[in-house]
Length: 356
Image (cartoon, rainbow, N blue to C red):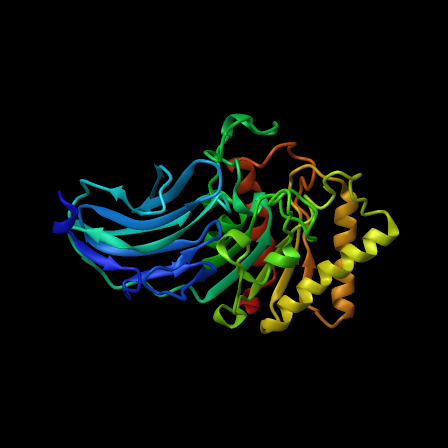
């Protein structure tokens, strides 16, 4: 079937719904930066295609697709011209729901132009009233989680992002468990400070630069996020895993008094600023089951006390049962589910009032 015979549903159609921190400056070509950002369409027809413009930095280029609950992916070559992606074909000609989502973090970003179908678009479902936000690193972005033969092992070499899947990150699973939308502000290798961690070598970018950005890397042109556009009731801060790394220098030591004071000051400063934009959200401080020194978790406990001393009362430090000891490599799907189930139970234990 030729594309010219299909119905075009533009990106700014009211039938298209979005989830994630997305740039709508041009509503006909919104820019998608963060892993886990979703574009949803309900339609009646037998096929669906998506038109995008892609901007590649590294790794294989893939987007995730879920049609009627069945997950697949589409892999495509590098081109900054318009690309037409086939999401599904030969469906029964009835009502369907399709979700196109960003599997990977900053290996690329893309502009979404619209959908094509041989049928018609249906009215979009309203977004959940429960809203979450997660500031995290590669674990929150779902990096290498599909390498299921490497549970409790180091990552396979040379995978070029093919095992990355934000849909199976604990953060996104937890949000689905709780019936909440999620802005997943997660980037592999990120730490609190610029100049440390592993993201964007050799000019390392930390959460101190990224947390309040829409585009958080210079190649796309830094842009600020308007916090008033999305007010979450629950905020997760999951940074600390990559912070020891200081390229060309000895590792940062959180037990060294001067560095600890500086790190805690910036960590709590970021959270205080996030809190100031929202209506007294529940804040949950975590690291993950990926192996790391327990000294960082002790520092985060101290950060919790510092935030409470500033009058931010609804802040919690949550520890997974296997926190920091489960695996030397990225958590795989089973371990992501393990974390999600524990975190879901903890958030549920705080009561329904946190969502009001």
